[in-house]
Image (cartoon, rainbow, N blue to C red; front, side, top):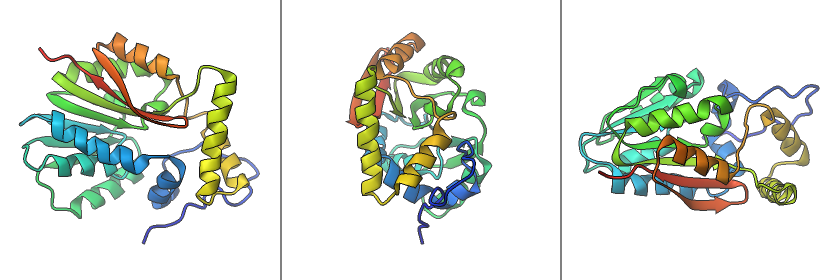
Length: 245
């Protein structure tokens, strides 16, 4: 039975920085559905992308795989394409739960879930790399180097799916997006206290960029095209394409 997210429902004397610990793992499916607009559509479309770009005998990497939603979406979409799927997460609690989740399904291709930092991951023979709301938790000074290594590890024609919370370049526009997102959370049952305390917990650990910054960084890493295919409030998903030979 899915547990409800009430981690921030009680007043806290000091709001600790957000981390993907056991308490978050326990409520993560409820948290993500009630906090990220379009999450189900994004995960579904990752599978659609996998079905189009994954080539036989190549690899799929899901970086920041959490409980494996995108991993499983890609796995189901490639049932007729022999490939290797590797999920990576830096949270031991997430990895242990994800491994149990994956083992509960009969999947057509091998899936390996590893506990390590994205910055320590080696990318080889990849046709698809997934970063579903992960880069925003990577230190900004490490982001270009990571994306460059992903680009180098992708085969020609390969794709990086990058989903992120972003900020608008103007203060007024950014405030609109924040307000609309907070209303989305209220509509999903979060109280004013929960919204405020969750925002405080994320303030120092989730550092967002504008779409223009993402696009420029991806182009600098080598990607030939960046396609924003989804946007709702301050949440977006992009396809970064490595040019075919």
